[in-house]
Image 1 (cartoon, helix red, strand yellow):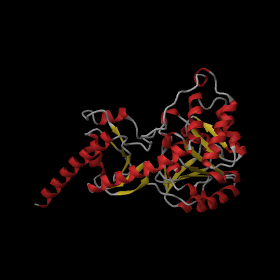
Image 2 (cartoon, one colour):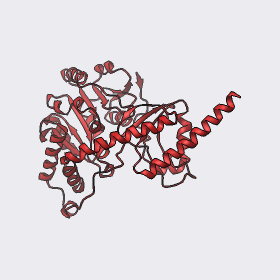
Image 3 (cartoon, helix red, strand yellow):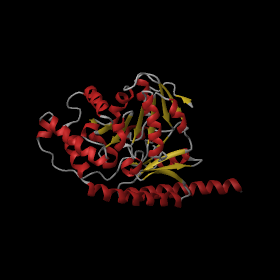
Length: 351
């Protein structure tokens, strides 16, 4: 169990090209940004109605979005869906649904959950043991987990939720990557029982992170509380239109899952071919664990290939998917150069 001192501080994330340029000022550009878990193949762009931009979003359209989201994610009804401008905005509001107490986060995982719980006044600790979460007032699990792809079964989560509900606590399950996970393990259909909030991210799977759209699924009373906090017009007009169209497009989603699985297998083969072990992940990102993670991060960064590194886990990297053949070739070339240098150094060390 680790007490997270200073959890309110700003968290370092992937996806910052400004920081990449500062770290690797002489790298060839544009960067191949593999530091996020965002789908590089976005949902197709389409012409928006002009009203999406020059009128305030209508309440009826927001309700339509909630209906589509409930159907796609498997929530009981639209009354169990609160939409917001990205799940990031929802995190501290969800954490404040219970009075300040003990927040336990199953880690290591996405660091913003600890920060959000601190903002809400909780004493935050990261735990590595699932069973320890039973002692929390606010228990947080990312499922599938970021960055290693760990999945906790629905049965175990429901048992934990029952215990939390009995004492007035709250279980928060962040399913940001469940679109490419084992959807039978989702708790979206169970939120009506109470004591559960499921978070779903739109931007990652649909590759539209800049649109800023996310959902909190819960019992109807909790959804009403969240919507009161968010106020009117919580979701911008363009996000409403894209959300409704993309979430209803089941055919595109099914094809994309197959395509992402193929790309993840290709990435595994590429890393494996150069002796880089893939230890987990999802089909939107791969989890790498190796002794010289820092060396690989730097070597690729100098060649304009940006991975996600973790200052508190020096032997771990996360790699997203290249978006085009040119990016694949640049990654392969950079890995080959790094591996050649590594092998030369190994031979020199044994002479």
